[in-house]
Length: 121
Length: 160
Length: 101
Image (cartoon, rainbow over all chains, first blue to last red; front, side, top):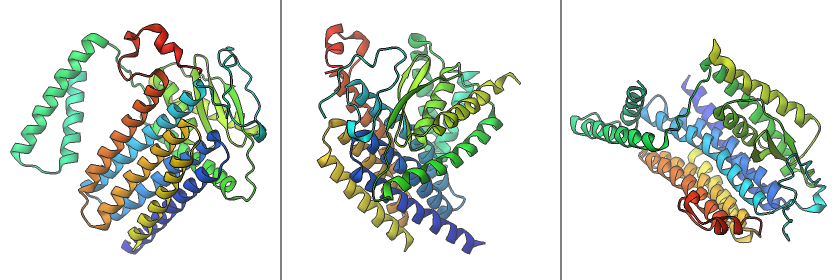
């Protein structure tokens, strides 16, 4: 039983490490800001969940697990909120995806977002 | 009634987080809870904007189980894009509608969209979200409509 | 053993986030990199607590998560409105001026 928990927490921790590193590779490789956001959200979702789960299994049924779960719930809620805040701020300030990544201008519904001039980069 | 629930919740949080059960430390906790309740009531008088949390418990839990599976699938798709030598990026932005009525339902839907890598909710105007997708295909619209229906279902569960 | 591997992986990821922080062309790249660095730091503090067998470090990790979130939102609000105070009490033209430039 304990060897099973040990192996499972190994798998979670190594998987989380790999996800975190891949997310960082994505942020250095991707060409523009909008695609980098997606790479950063791998770290926020998969890497965070796997690492917290691995640490929970390592801690067992103690108060430490409760703290880890509270940290996990907090990051689970605030991670996408921060990503949305960064994306929305960049969108409002006029940052648009590169033209050479086959980006199509959105079909606007309200016409509010189309009359802002695009940024230089 | 709301105040009693808040007090019980905060006291449980204090007891779980501190882990020391001496009378002095628990007394500090009680004083903190009383001060926080007083500030909350005072803020309620000027703001008066209570958030109603009417979600079905079991349907929420099954929804989050489904969301975990979706997160794993979306992560796998984005990881494949990152590790492939030529990154097959096909960026696209599009509007979708949402059918949730309350603010909490819309927040859950927008956060679920952003939490699955590959799609980000950029603008939350009235009547629709502006979505940015990194590798767009026409299946994305169906997947997002499916997610929309599921969130609306857990929101509507409070009638039972 | 496994915590050393995880801590090393997080360290490498943090170095890459720092690279994006220095290289990022726009200010939003940098804000995104700072937020990602903060998430890595929260996880690293937790792993470090297990590594040295002092789980009290988790309190610091929770506090760091709170500060990271509030700090990121404050930076974004400042770059959008050029103010951190109450937006609704500001003069109209200073809050609308910076948006879209």
